[in-house]
Each structure stands twice: as structure tokens, then as C-alpha cells.
Amino acid sequence: MKILVLNGPNINMLGIREPDIYGKQTYHNLLQLIQDTAKQESLEIEHYQSNHEGALVDKIQDAYGKFDGIVINPAAYTHTSIAILDALKAVSIPAVEIHISDVSKREAFRQVSYAGLACEKSIIGQGIDGYRQAILYLKEKYAKK
Ligand code: DQA
Image (spheres, rainbow, N blue to C red):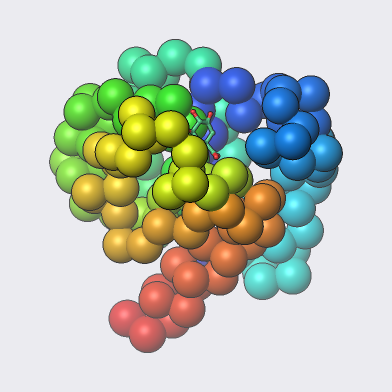
């Protein structure tokens, strides 16, 4: 099984950016967690991060026919990007949305998730462990196919 993990803008600043909101775990820790999960679960996982909306759209389009699942944290684009929503719908690969912080308890502008409309599940406020949970969810779903 092949899973694509996608991260949007500023996720590469984890550990540095607003640690009171996003925690002290670094971006390096996140990449390590993804790698460890891939190994433990015998999955092929590719990771991609970009600060650019179009690059994320390109990566989702590229995933068509190549990946069995997508874990996506579109970061700020969650709340603005119809292009990312449309790309996820276009490829119709089972997707899980993840947010490190509990967006439901934050500002009003974070209460809308466009990408979430194309995702089977949303995991929020679990810190970086949310990525592991999303990967396990997709693995279980794939096994039931
Ligand atoms: C985030 C939440 C978004 O509102 C924010 O813009 C981010 C990160 C999260 O993981 O909690 O950059 O997606």
C-alpha cells in the first residue's frame, strides 16, 4: 500500500512556530514519526511539504493512479483553498485531513475546512500523533477492500 502525506504552508516550521499552539515537536520529529510508522506498518509512504497552493494541487494530481491513500494537513489553505478541495475530489483517492492543533477551539476563520469536504475523516488536536492515526485508518480501510 502506498500513502502520500502532504503538508501545507509553515508545517516545516514545527517546533519553532507558536509552540504553545503546535507543540514542541519539530518538523524533523514529524518526518521521523512518518518514517517509523511506514516501517512498523510495512507501508510505502511518501512525504511532501510545500508553502505553495499550486504545488500541493500538482502533487495531488500526480498521485492519481499511484497512491492508495492521502493524509493531508493543508494548514492555512484548509480554510481558503477550493483548488485543493477540487484536486482531492478529482483524484478521488481516500483521504484523511489532519490538524495538529484543535482548530475547533480557535478563531472563527479556522472553522471552515474546504479540503475536509473531500476527506473521509478529520483528526484534529492530537499533535503530530494525528498523522500516525490517519495512516493507520487508511491502512485498515485498505485492508477491508
Ligand atoms: C493547522 C491549523 C491551521 O488553521 C493553520 O493555519 C496551520 C496548521 C494545524 O495543523 O493545526 O497552519 O492546519
